[in-house]
Length: 431
Image 1 (tube, rainbow, N blue to C red):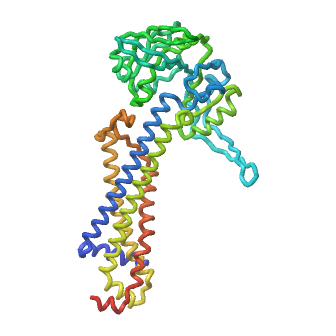
Image 2 (image 1 turned 135 degrees about the vertical axis):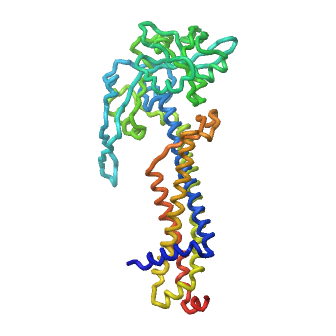
Image 3 (image 1 turned 90 degrees about the horizontal axis):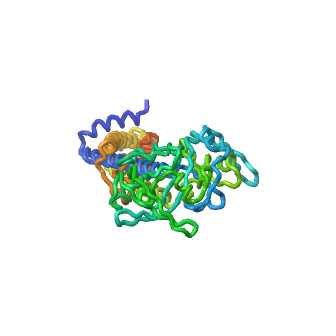
């Protein structure tokens, strides 16, 4: 039988009655608070990135297919022919193997990456900038034209009034879907009408629209700039035919497939005159901002691990000093230093596991309360969300627990060296 483990259990049982029990409880509380803060921080950062990304991808799609000559400008008034071999059959792409060529030490090596899903949906779009005039109020706006293939699944959940645009009729609809921000600034509501002024080929054009619905995504940067109309209205303004559109928006099943599927579409599915680009490439600023949240997460996790380590080192040293007489007796009976050190490391592991247990209960409990009751509110204008989002990842929680246990124990190996510095004669006389 492992005598170190056996004695550690006895020491742990007696520790509840010893003078060090206060230190032990403080160590347990420190571990519990550290792991609970780490769980909450990870869940919040993951939820925040997930919600913001889903809003951006929901509004723009994951991949844009446009004219290769204007791919850097999303709002460029350049068209492509809607009659393409990949449209609308591109949404039949399922899980695929993407072959990546890499150069390693002068040799070309091929590796296969499998995607988690495929293309969920593809739809056409077009843009036209204009100026809205309503009730003596003026507002600049970009009209995004959508067709019968438009997927309303995303925007429907953000409708705060009215309904989506009716694009099913044989004639172009005069309906428009504006944001809550635009509606408030123009002082209009569902059912109201206004005119939008455009400039095309040096001429000023006017078109009348009727508000059919109002949406609010919380992405203030986009809400205040964009409104949705029937794509046929945009085509008429630009002098395009019904087969001419600005490009195609592609939606994927899994965001993790963004890069491989974008490259697969570009190299294998679209003609040379078209270009496929991810929204991450088109709007790098907001995604770089989201990536910065990873730094905050790492800082928080590092600080909490340091707190746990410092508290456990303090607790371990006190436990060793408290058991000086026991260490002396064991050494006089022939016990090796490493065997005695293991007793205290087992004891420390028991304290850490106890703290992890209560910390998980606290951290997961707080996250569940926030997830279902949303008691932590945010300024939506600055954070794009009205509440702090929570997203659980069981693997992350498991790794946090294992990492905290392993890293803390590794750091405790050094202070446990104090055992070897204790002389058996002086230790026995110490009592």
